[in-house]
Structure formats: structure tokens, C-alpha cells
Length: 204
Image (tube, rainbow, N blue to C red):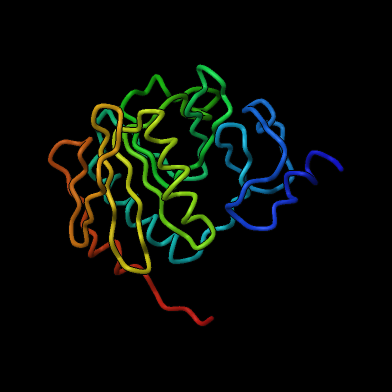
């Protein structure tokens, strides 16, 4: 079985591909038109986002973009590689829906190919295939790598859980439904009413 066949052997989106461990060097060579993330060497197959996911992402991005115009911090959206442990094992590469990076030296490679190290803020918009991954495994790896603020966006129930890093650990999540303060950015709140108004009902 080829390496590509092993990677696509996973039966479920968001579940690990079994019995193989990879690094960013391996990941960079894959060209089989499948989106992956690596977490401590384990490859996870990622699915395509829904229309509601994309519309929500765009509304978040517009609010962040407006606030950050002319400021030091950078907003980047998926697909964009974040290499959380690049200076050591370089075997964890994720593509969060949204990242805010305030240290521009972390953006490296031709054209700013990837973030090397932890962004200041990571936002993941839940989907059925990746919800468990985002809420458990990825939350732990973001905490371990030093992501200062982590948001988990629940589209179905229209709320955001926010984790703040304190003394190297995330405390209990704070849940927001109307507006949410961005702790890593001064005097800035996201209007969740506008974000969730973008969600539409589609035929099954």
C-alpha cells in the first residue's frame, strides 16, 4: 500500500490515519488533493467546510480585519499552516479557521507560507466531523504550545466558548452569546449577533 493510500485509509473525517507517524517534511510533499492536519505526528483527514461554516468565517474575518487595519497584529484564515512545535519535533501542523499573530517574525517561508510557533489567538468553527478533535485533542495541543486564547464556535447552538491561557493552562471556558471580548487585542469585541445572522437553513 502506498503512503497516499495509507493516509486516505481513515474511515472518518477528523479521525486519525492509523499506524503511521509523519513530520512537516512529509506533509509538505503530499499532493493527493486531500486536506490533512498533523498532531504530534498523527495525520487527520479534514473535510470541506459547509456554506454556513464559510459564511460565519467571513463575518468573523471582516470584523477582525476592520479592527486590525493599520495595526501590528495579522489576521490569517484557513487554509494556512501553523507549525506549533516547529523548533523541536516539527510534527504538528494545523490549519485553524482563524489565527491572529502579533509577532510577525513567526510568519516564515516564501510569501509567508506558515506560522512557526503559537499564534496569539486561534478560532475553530465546529463541524460534525471535527467537533471532538477541536474540543479535546486540539485544545490540549494549543494549550501545550502556548496559544494565549482559544475560541470554539458552536454554529448549531450559536455560542462561543473562550479559553484563556494562565500559568500555562486553560481554565474553565467562558461562554458568550452576544458579544465576546478579544483578550489578546485591546478594546475590541466581536459582535456575535452579526456573526450568527449569517447562518442559513438549507435543504437536507
